[in-house]
Image (tube, rainbow, N blue to C red):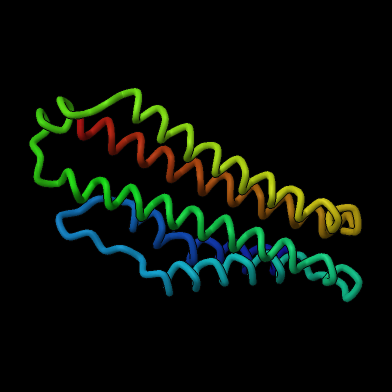
Amino acid sequence: MFKILAIAGTAFFVAASPLAYAQTPSPSPERLSAADWNKLTDLRIDLVKAALQLTPDQTKYWPPIENAIRARAHDRQARLAKVAETMGKRADDSSAEMFGNRDPVAFLSRRADALAQRSADLKKLSEAWQPLYPTLSPEQKKRMVALAIFVLRDMSDVADHRRMQIDEDD
């Protein structure tokens, strides 16, 4: 059990680490290609599946979960591409021009739209998990909790890294 969790955790961190580096701005940023995003999503799906060790009866509930994970990853990729495009358009502007040309109301509207999309994706993922979760054994539920903790910790680390970057830029 511990060996599986250790392998799963290691695989997750290895698979997720390019995202943290890909989000770090640099003089010549390297962006993940669509194929790289798909490989990363495949790795995450395989990790969750391997960690849970679904029984044959449980596997019938898996396709909607996989589809929801893929849809969520696709929407996230689209949001990040849109942000990169916006940042690329403003790359030539000076700091004064960037702040002077900002429309805070439009920013709030775009942010609300992005959060609504994230909320809808998360709701779909929750609904996809609903039929499978009650069928999981106590051991499978523990593994799912461990995976969720790894994911939340990684997300928190990336968010903290972004906040530190913003503070450094100011």
